[in-house]
Image (tube, rainbow, N blue to C red):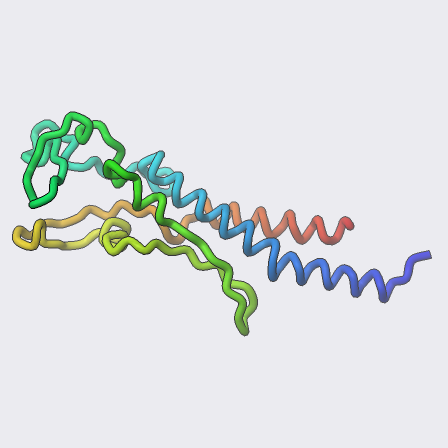
Length: 166
């Protein structure tokens, strides 16, 4: 015969552990993977990023690769390199997540330490080499995503159902 009060207490503990520890870690990792994958797919939520000038043969930026001292150098590799990866891939590699616990419970925060991340993600106006005005096209790689939100809902549902099946 089962002991209903003990079973209910254990279920409450299991659900609390899922909500405070397991689910936030899984959501953090899933989100980070999704954001990093956008660099490989060159898209956001299934919508391809606009091509970059360095890959367009009719652009004066075709083949551009920055060199120290602001010198403009042609690079064949730059004409085919993935968008936003640069020669190092450091922007995509810089995405991190952390789980914060506060008054509202667990919260997942994704971030990057690259100062140029926001202008690439949101788009906007800049000065090229501090001189010439240019507009950066939005190429979102981090933030709200319908696809990712559905993945989060699936994680939450499956983990809570698992707690009930124990």
